[in-house]
Length: 463
Image (cartoon, rainbow, N blue to C red):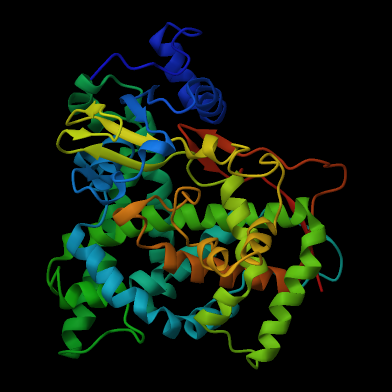
């Protein structure tokens, strides 16, 4: 392909300096380069080489091509599957999720509501109390994920919940440590890189729990272990069978890595936005309590979708503080040609600079301002907008979940789980920033990942 313009290539001719900027300041790197190159293809220098940023104008057609692989990108850029076993579900497993689990989500709503309320981690507070929400939200998301993906027993098993959340953290820490080594040395040093011990230990412990789950299934001599069935139930009846402990463990760990961090991040970011912009709380609470009254306290999936202000608030949080500043991340598995005639060779990695696109005034009015009802107002304008501006929408201006045929298949699970958690917080508490804090605290951001600071503090007071 022709010589590719490189983000900050002129300002930072030293490659290591560009890598350092990618690690420490991806947001500004993407925004400045996006504004500079406009509708051009450009590259950003990462720890793993050059990622090719595709402009929106060239996106049509790419969403359906089979020559692009998210799994290969994930396994090479982030999870380093050859060392961690962590990757993406394969196509057959994703098909089971789409055909079996997603259609059953309405059955899950009352089950998850009961689970969330039974294990509510916070107290009732007569007065204002300082709370660090991250660890609580992580536990809640781990529990909900365990019920959906693993089993009803796993959702009650603190040992499994520890494994799920800690394996996510240990994998991130270990892969970041390994990336500090040149690629050619990694096969020789990976065993000695700090953090590998706890990561492998957690995997072995997880394998033991999964083995026990499969043993219980076999002892039943047919039928699902959980009602409604978990994804493990469906996979054991189909793609993975009931005996392959390692394959099931890998699938569960992959699901944990994919779901827990991103869902916990979004829920915590929403709590921070509720505290930073408290004028949204009364309207959101009114929408929720009105819907609860209409449904006699028993929400279902449709009622979650019908709360359009809540849907908009979460979507706006994701626009400004998504779990990842890039989306549609793919490895090119065979040569492709873009609509402008540019050929992208096999082996290249492409992505959309979503963090920059979301700050583009041609797509979003006053893009730097948090407008919690931005998408609600859009949906009120027309029937078409009513359908196209939802939290789970995928499109050229709705890129949080990716794009095209390989957009995140778990977004419907995430929608249900995150909304149910956020609803409980809104109904139970008034939420505000600590005294003296006037602006939204900063995230932890590295290599394009956006993570709430675990030390964030919010003020909770029971209603």
